[in-house]
Image 1 (cartoon, rainbow, N blue to C red):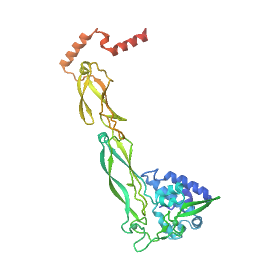
Image 2 (image 1 turned 180 degrees about the horizontal axis):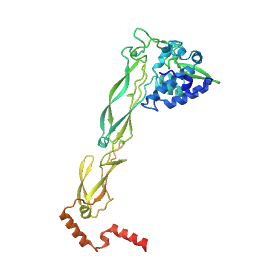
Image 3 (image 1 turned 90 degrees about the vertical axis):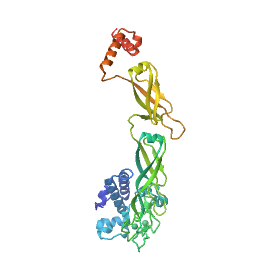
Image 4 (image 1 turned 120 degrees about the horizontal axis):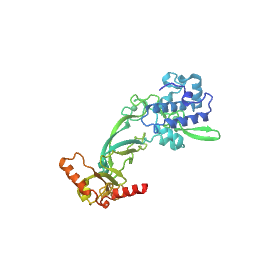
Amino acid sequence: MSNKDFYETLGVARSASDDEIKKAYRKLAMKYHPDRNPDDKDAEEKFKEVQKAYDILSDKEKRSTYDQFGHAGVDPNMGGGGFGGFGGAQGFDFGDIFSQMFGGGAGGRQQSYQGADLQYAVEITLEEAAKGIKKRITIPTYEECDVCHGSGAKPGTSATTCSTCHGSGTIHVRQAIFQMQQTCPTCHGTGRQIKDPCMKCRGEGRVKTSKTVEVNIPAGIDDGQRIRLSGEGEPGMHGAPNGDLYVVVHVKEHKTFERNGLDLHCEMPISFAIAALGGEVEVPTLDGKVKLSIPKETQTGRRMRVKGKGIKSLRSSAVGDLYCHVVVETPVNLTDRQKELLEEFEKISTGMERSQTPRQKSFFDKVRDIFD
Ligand SMILES: [Zn+2]
Ligand SMILES: [Zn+2]
């Protein structure tokens, strides 16, 4: 961790009041909080710096020591050794800051132990979303340190009662006429101080690891929906509840179907002969092909409904439909014989009734209206 000036870190003057320091700290802590900056190492580092600076500057005694001796006065790593307990601050608990700000009161101590909620994104296909699927995902988590068995203290030593809060985990701060209760900045609410931290977990009592969880993604899930796995988030410490795991589902774009609510839509090209004479075509659905009969004189843009071939509802027994949007296709790469037949078709159609071409009729009617 850098040894940037604590006043500079919080962006306040050396003469700043307690209130100004608190305000600056809240603003920066919100800005750099890991919940708002997932996977941002810079923000995490800044967050720690801000937290550390506030730990010192919010404490009258530590602040005056810092003012006199600088970092050497308050940082045990600098050899000054002013405050033995500060070593415990290496294991920052990100959940802690919100409980300090909003939790308050005696509940703050419990909250600081609860495991953080985790969020994880999975990508599935439209077919998987329609039918439902089990996915195994591997997520980062913590497990109890096997060297100190969760105590955080070096084997052979043990944690002592925090000398700042005398083990209560909270301190009373007088602010103007109010007396406020706050999480103890020395022990971060644990009520304990670790003089000799465990080498493996650096006093945290837990180490990073990963675990595999099976997620049951239900049929009908849509893009962006979340599944909550209660208790599968980060483990709580010292018996406190685990956080929850939120799995956000992303449904990949499908090359044929577009989803809208429970309904599916697709484009259906048909030949102009079928369009004119009618006939049967095969259309794809999410579970195999089905036959669809095209009525004669079908135009581009007509919507054909295939009932019950959409998506099953997540919450009810409702099932959506599949809508096929007809596109009459102009044939390409014609053979000589095909050209011959079409030329003949065009020849015998010349001068035919406009009623045979309803679109052309309405088009030319409009043109006439414009120029007459
Ligand atoms: Zn350990
Ligand atoms: Zn304490």
